[in-house]
View 1 (cartoon, rainbow, N blue to C red):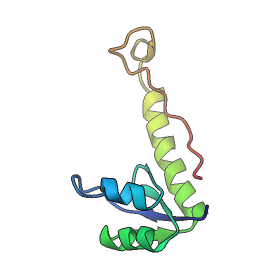
View 2: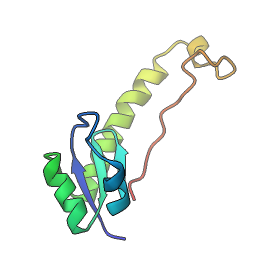
View 3: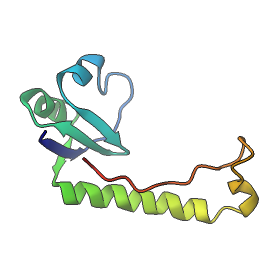
View 4: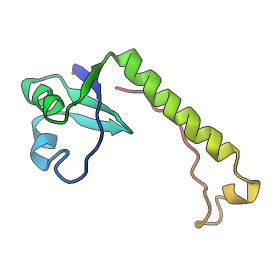
Length: 99
C-alpha cells in the first residue's frame, strides 16, 4: 500500500471522522500523519491544511520529537521511573518507524 506523509495539527472533534478511517488508511504520530494514497486521503490532507512531506522528512520529525520526549524521561529521578508503581512515569518513549 502506498502512503502519503504530512504534518497537520489535530484540531479536535471532526479532525478525522469514522468515515475518514473507513475511506483510507490513517495513522498519527504526533503532528505527522500517514495517509493512504488515494483521492479521499488526498482530500483529507487538503481539508486539514496538511503539509506534504517525504517519508524521510516525516520520519525525521517523528525521531526528533521522540528524542525530546526520551531526554525528558531520562532526566526524571529514578524513583519516578519505577514501573512497579502505576502512578509514576513508567512510560519510556520508543522510536516509531513509519510504515
